[in-house]
Image (cartoon, rainbow, N blue to C red):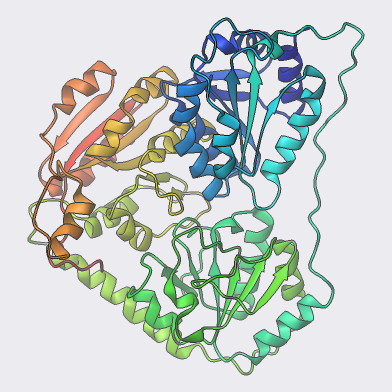
Length: 541
């Protein structure tokens, strides 16, 4: 048995059944070991795609999955995906390779210190220097990645270490994964929390990024329903709480001056549930000294934009279970003004659709409306980064967990397509639509072939304005001259044909919904090239 065989056997013990990656000559031993195991390798065209797919798995399941690349240039290509997972609290194990440690015939060719490079964007990074340490290093890697707050772990394995022979008498340690029970809040914490809630006149809830857990969803939803308490969400996890229209204030799509800020300003206490300010914050959390209580697995990262005066630390599901089991005196509460403003905001959002009536192209408000009308409650939408994401985060109402995926932490433009691929792989019975723009598509072109090879059924909507539309829009409304942001229009049809994908060009916005309804029922990859523009009034409303 080689060290690489031992490595793979430990991965099997950790229930890993899929690895995403781009092999190289240095990791052929591991590739051979994977080929003789129960693990499937999904070969991607780009290392970023591998990391984004593994991160999406971690985001949806809470379990760390594995992305693989080889050494120097391939490792540096993974960095954006690693940072995406780290800032987005997605557990992931990233494995890179290195030239032989003991005797290398190629000197310093292709060698940089990848471990030191990875340390700033991971929870932990280290090199494996002996086959004997493999079981324990892997066990700790999974624990670190999945522990609160979840994130990325990087491991480096040298070519000669992977090829080392393990003695025949070696007995592989039993590292079967055991269910981890997270500590519950201190016994004094819940009475203190109840006391603060009862003192408030208009307490509300912010549902943050890391609250996407089944136990949290169950008990948090129960608490909101029991007390009809208003809640709003961050962009990345707007779907955590079971749908309750009367209590839902909306999504914090903008840092300031958004619809929901008027309603939230009427509150005197915000219960912040697993919020982390790595996700773009809303200034309502600190403006005018707004009182905030941090309910989380870990202590708050206290700074200018997020300054809770009380931390309730421990299992969040247990916290809200205890709150549900308690009888909280709500006689002091008054949500009438908050709910009145909320209803007015809903009417404003509906009315603002008419602002796009005379526009020749599709615009973001109508796009959000028609996507919601076509997609079923179980279908899944993934979003690239761009200004349109603000409208879709606000206007697209999700009614089930994990039915809209976007990135508002690193806010990278590469993750949307890989996320859609992984979501469809895990949910073959659900329709998946991913929305990007013309520049974002080009960043992911190579892995259209990967999706075709995997026999995935996806609809890709390209918002095409042949420019860096978000930056151009901000350039215009910032009073700057129009410079350097336009592209030549590409022949996307020929590109689609080269990747065995179907392509549709839509210039009239009235044709979009019908086409989407048709192609979403078909198999294969379907790309809709949709002429798109932003509102000319400069308002993100």
